[in-house]
Image 1 (cartoon, rainbow, N blue to C red):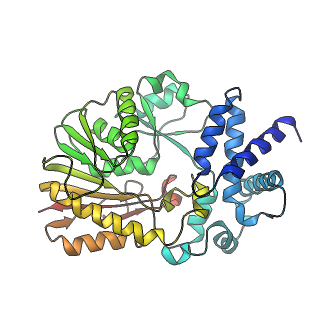
Image 2: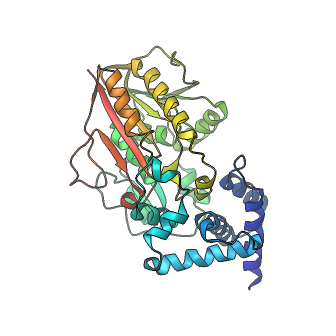
Image 3: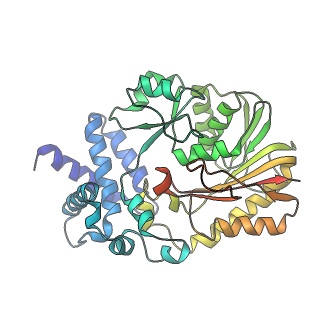
Length: 379
């Protein structure tokens, strides 16, 4: 074993040993790699891969072995799957790669499990109309095939993109392609007024602003003030200025009396759609969280709906795939709010699919996170 490999296994084991339900592995990994400032980028990438491989292949590991040996075995399995995926049966993948309760909560099939066992792709979002130009600057072949997402750029290099001058100049954001699709499905136009209700640190808000040409106004809210502060920094770098922000805890009183052309409810969810990128969450998400989150999602929609002006659009998006948080929430809203008409959506990843008011984006079809989107127009 090479010295660098021993170091990778040691650091990865340390991160895994410190991770639990209250200390997510991705957060612990960021903390550790930030502390190890002398590590070259290649070594940091190897440690990250080792940590995430451990949680992807946890169902195959002998927990009686030392942690470093388990991590080493997980990396062997990840390498084998990348080269010979056919040697892993669908049945074994479904049995071992996800907890049993998930099979009752959603459609678990071989294609989905194979997708989340693969290592995730890194997607960039270029400024509107600059996808090919950005790809050229970064030495990449080009943008994604679907013309509906012309600014999505797949990055397959090993460079630390956060050091690039293009990043600091606001020319691109690191953003999953499914999240980019949500903003495109919102279909905002310059001069409109929008409300991003659960904006987090502003990934979709920045995209909305770009699609609006920095014109009109976007109200941005989140229950956590620290997220909004990070959003403000990101917006300054991206040169997005057509927004105002305010904390909102999901109550019946919105942050402003304004009526909106569009309201995006990117609601908190179980996050099952991100299990390819965040495999630790497979083993920390509890089944009882799903109905609790569905209740929160329904409440957020009901509180946000009155803020939509007649003719305006209400968009519901969650990065999960459980029936209870997706189709059930959307159908319940439609049955209660008669003044909102479901709007058919075209699948940006497959133009041959018939438009549907309930759109599920699967990782095996998008190359990104799993996502559910529903849109209504207020009559």
